[in-house]
Length: 412
Image 1 (cartoon, rainbow, N blue to C red):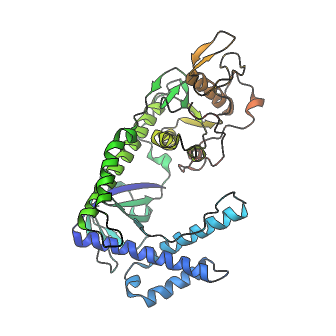
Image 2: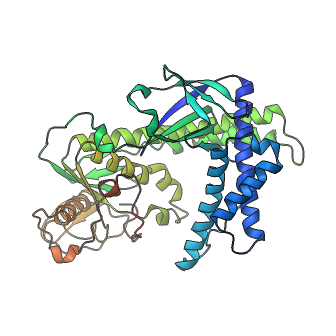
Image 3: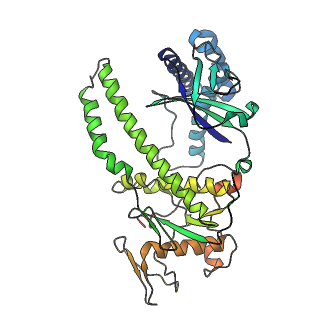
């Protein structure tokens, strides 16, 4: 599965119709959730039958495509199943009890309710919500895609407009653009907060810090928005405009971060045959209140997803290894050299003096080579299947490993 996204161009009436369709989907989801809360032993089939009852009772629900209503039911059931799984697994803390949605921003159609024009530049929604035909703007060529391969169509509302996403079922291995020549070069990457990453060759990439640089503007826009807020009253158009400007700035920062991760990951993949990196539990690391903002601004998880995607696309090996003791262990003699996070230089009794991050990157590369069966100086017994091959190589999906990792290496 992969996703093709286009921006939609229409008039205000069509945009209002899309908003109404999204609100209807939200209504169906919340109603199904309330039905599950009020009745014991409700299953997915019961929710589908309740959806049929809602379509017969409310005219505005019946106007929405039946498959779109079914996807709203599936959203509710997904949150219920996640809650049950967390309870059965004995997850500590909050179990994720399903909540009502107040401001959904997306709507999903299946294989009906939409139609693409012959020139593949317009899409028409055929249900009775009145969305009609909209122009699609984007760089993708839909003529290369068989319409039967499109399994889902998402309508997404963002701060800068409306988008349509096509979920296409196709093997990603068939989308290889060019066969990259072998570089006969392997590298290890150590991500951190001082540098975005330092590789085993000693090359360093600075963190652009898009959020930090835009924080002053974001705070100013947020203050302007807050001054126009009317508590307990209907909000004015000036408040809605100020809120939109604030949201568009956040959207710009997120897109800058995404493009940086994409370009950096592509350069790494093009210059190496094997890339080893740390299998960090980022969701656990951001619980550190003092470093959460910097970790999120560095976008380690996004960088890893793009590494796995490009590695699978161009046939390169990407492998995640555990970060335990990668900076404490000497890359030359293997001795443990204790050092605090403030110490940025690795000095060992064997005479090796290296940048702390480069020393860790060399250890990460050796773990990666040992994991994939190559000859390395690190003992296989100490590796013991720690290395976790990226999910893109296993099943073709870009998801991160759920295995937890120690936060000891934070800031490396």
